[in-house]
Image 1 (cartoon, rainbow, N blue to C red):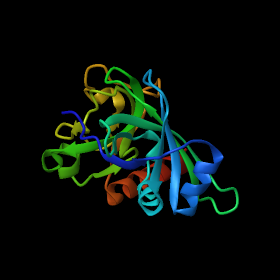
Image 2 (cartoon, rainbow, N blue to C red):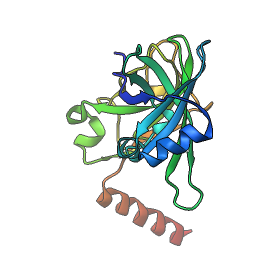
Image 3 (cartoon, one colour):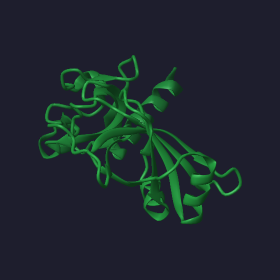
Length: 206
């Protein structure tokens, strides 16, 4: 299933250059520019508080947005930079790049674990330890998966779940070129403690 693309709302900005940008900031707005896609750059403004909320939500630089500007067609964009005030750290300018459906981008995709109630290891007292709740993938802008799904049914205590255990959507690939860990089924504390004691006793006998 394709992931629903979140909206990013802005308004067209009349004029370019430092003067227009300073005017926008006086009006408690953050200037920005949309470029790429084979058409002219489009100057825009963001409501300051709206942009701050989007930035605080996280992953702003790796989220594909549906840019909405009144009077214009919606366009898919990804942020390519947020300039900030060197003293206060507040945003002063935003650079956005237009994307086609066939463009490839890196995005963090949520991992969903299913069938925990059927998991062999969990039913025996194991604990699911999640190492990566999200995985960075290289995806097509027009085919973004909603989430990655891992079926826990057959995993046992001590098993490690890696990216190779996940069936990735066609055209999607990890950005890390190795079989990295996503989660594992850890032994119950009592069992782990017993194992430690056995190892200690064996070492003492040697």
